[in-house]
Amino acid sequence: METKNHSFASAFAGMMLRDLRVLRREIGPFVLRIIMQPLLFLFVFTYIFPRIGQGNAVGGANFATVLLPGLMAVAIMFSGIAAVALPLSQEFGITREIDDRVMCPLPVAAVAIEKICFSSVQSILAALLVVPLAYLIPATPVHAHVASWPMLVATLILASLVSGALGLTIGSNVKPQQIGLVFSIVVVPITFLGCVYYPWAVLSHVRWLQIAVLLNPIVYMSEGLRAALTPGVPHMPSLLILVALLASLGLLGTFGIKGFLRRVIS
Amino acid sequence: MIVEISGLSKVYQDKQQRVTAVDGIDLTVEKGELFGLLGPNGAGKTTTIGICTTRVLPTSGKVTIAGIDVVAHPAAARRNIGVVPQYNTLDRSLTIFENLYFHCKYFGYSGADAQQRSKDLLAQFHLEERGTNFPNQLSGGLQQRVQIARAIAHRPAVLFLDEPSAGLDPQSRIAMWDAVRSLREEGITVVLTTHYMEEADELCERVAIIDHGKVLALDAPAHLKTTLGADTVIELTLRQNDGKQPLIDRLNALPQIRGLEMTSAGLRLFAQGVDGLLPEILQAANNYGVRDIRMNEPNLETVFIRLTGRDLRE
Ligand SMILES: Nc1ncnc2c1ncn2[C@@H]1O[C@H](COP(=O)(O)OP(=O)(O)OP(=O)(O)O)[C@@H](O)[C@H]1O
Ligand SMILES: [Mg+2]
Image (cartoon, rainbow over all chains, first blue to last red; front, side):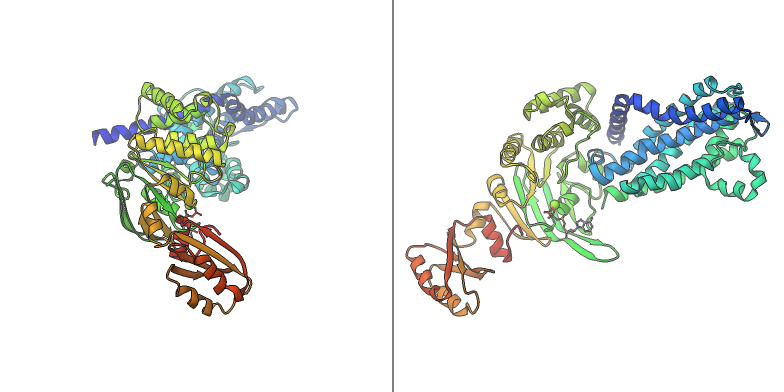
């Protein structure tokens, strides 16, 4: 058992190292891809808008402050899609290069889990990259501080794993030709309706939507980061957020791993 | 016995149809052997290899590799297995060297050992200058060689090669054969599939001829050829192809003719000793208008045709 676990661990570590090598080679495009969207968002809504008299405040806080956790959640989300769904769909559909890793001496599910884990590293990096932008760009200052380190760490890790699991679910169930479509009809809507641009509490004005979005894991990512970073903005209770993220992880992780196994073992 | 396959079958079932890809295969491969699975498209070669390499779950039957059951302990079995699949699976994001290096890492090599092993493999497969290239910068033949190098990097007991020469030009094919032969000297058992009978003949010590998921014959190529009981295969092309029965009866009566079958263009005769045979055949077939007569030594292809009545590639 001892040696078996050891061999699993070293195969897993080998795959992480492989992904790290590939990421390092593409670090420039990686960073650009991540910062483009929050950069433009902050620029238009928190730099230009206040200057042209469109300044707005939500839930009693300035927009930049509301936006910071939301944009971090979006970065986490997109990074999971980019790190897992797109490459995996390619590898299954066209290049088949995942085969060598599937033939490693460890259970096949571990290859899928490695994908989720490495993607979560990228997601955390992506979320952290948003922070300096939120301080540099907006015309009005962002009021954020770490209200609770445990909550921040737990949310970042869980949210990143959830986004990796969603990426795995999409990547192993969607053909490469249809990835663009899924992106437009699933990923974009859930980010737009993920309480990114406003806290969940203010949705009480649109009650049906407030209830419907509870099925959307991005809501809990945004709200969790609000709870940890901008406690002045209304947010859901921390415990509820963490439980919801855990449940999403369990659900998406199971779907993703099942789909992965179906693709590599016939 | 390094590979043991018993009572193996695989049925692919989906809503529309049910395909029996493997239909009761029993095989054993000895340690150090170079074993071939020869069969036409769709014979079940890839499926059989897939089951042996833990990628396909059998419907029934059992496979053990070096004594380990591949269904019960797939992760452990993979330690003893090297695979070169039918399609190119090199990691396109990594260089050739890194493809080898990370493969070693997956199998638990330390950084230094993985580095050394990768260097040695590049030398062994004459790829030293290609280490820093990416797979897409290499020709198909070289990529195939890299795949073989990578597959044996963790020193597996058995190497499975699925159609290793598909898409290679004759020169690369010969280079690949040399690479495979050199593995034997390292004591690696090789199981390969092919639908090129020359490849099975040249390379393999024993060959299983399979069709429709069944093993039709299994022996050394030289022995398989003698099972025909004939040293010459004669292809007769006739202008008039109907009402051949009198001709068939007449030819069958000749002592040298050991077997005979109809083809779309005429007849195929299996003969032992051809002295004086040709004039007799020509005379007998005179009324049917002989268009062409061709004589060949039996090869695995003719063995296959004799077994199935079909051509190997069509
Ligand atoms: N995943 C699958 N689902 C359904 N049917 C399959 C699947 N894989 C293979 N088959 C069918 O099983 C049969 C055997 O296929 P297999 O790929 O094992 O043949 P093969 O001998 O490798 O042929 P080839 O020379 O074309 O590679 C074929 O009829 C094929 O269509
Ligand atoms: Mg095949």
